[in-house]
Length: 348
Ligand code: NDP
Image (cartoon, rainbow, N blue to C red; front, side):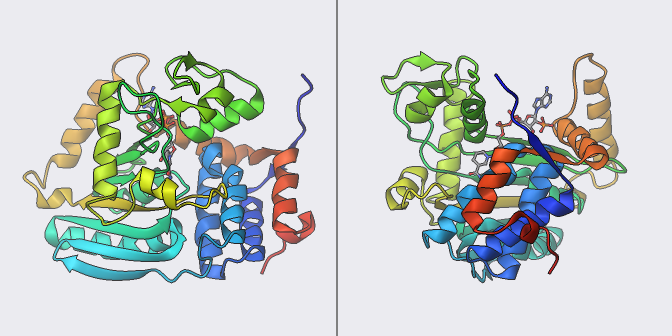
């Protein structure tokens, strides 16, 4: 098969392309910048399934009017350690930016704090919001749900979202440990990328429309994904549905699907962030060194690494070599946004 030509971009060009496209399709500057920051961070860390690849979905949901490109998220305090951001039906990144400092302040004061984010459309990786908290010396968790893709244990039809969860731990002098994983065996974006590349996926990733196991990504996208680890991953997917649906007063995955207009962009939903100040728990003087001993002992085993290390290596590769995207994707983004390639790299 002939290899598709690719285009080299700097991170600044990735940002400009995203920002210009979003502005052209109905975002105001604050929302366009927040989403462009998110797309650029994903490309920087070589998480391409949440980078420019997502721009067509963002554009579709702006054009259909599902998402408010002028959203003005508002913060309120529900209890001493419980904050809430109403996202004004916009994308999650601006709501997350506005909630970050109040959540950090609240966690430092109370020892532990929660941020409920409602009426937003989340289309990105969770490690970004977790990292922003962990880089301030806090431990953090994040949970969100998406439209039904994953069959419940024993079932064969989509019910749970791919429902990701992330956890981060701060470290002295080195980047934090952060894991971020879907409760599906494989992220949906990765299955879509495999389909585009004409490659099979591993066994255990999903079922076809008739409920039979398959490695064909197209058949899985039509059928159902499976949770990782069988019933155990499915239980985590259920936990996330309850945390971001009934707990926050937002839509669960099946409710989001029923309300969605099917434009291919992110559905409306909620996100729960939890932040913990380790200095306010039982071992304020030693927790960091104690954790380092855990990491050191773990890494003594050959073949091990810490979660997020692949991203940090990817970040270094990007610094050295920039980003490569397919010329098809590059052209598609420009066509969808109705801008010429030169325009997308113009500075404001
Ligand atoms: P992966 O299975 O690729 O990785 C999961 C985690 O495990 C990562 O933190 C990864 O770190 C770590 N890891 C992988 N291999 C090892 C190893 N050998 N040793 C130690 N740690 C390891 O992730 P998923 O495909 O499940 O990720 C899905 C992504 O999609 C997430 O970013 C999630 O937030 C996002 N998502 C977003 C949704 C939304 O609605 N917004 C819905 C569903 C998913 P590393 O990164 O360093 O490899």
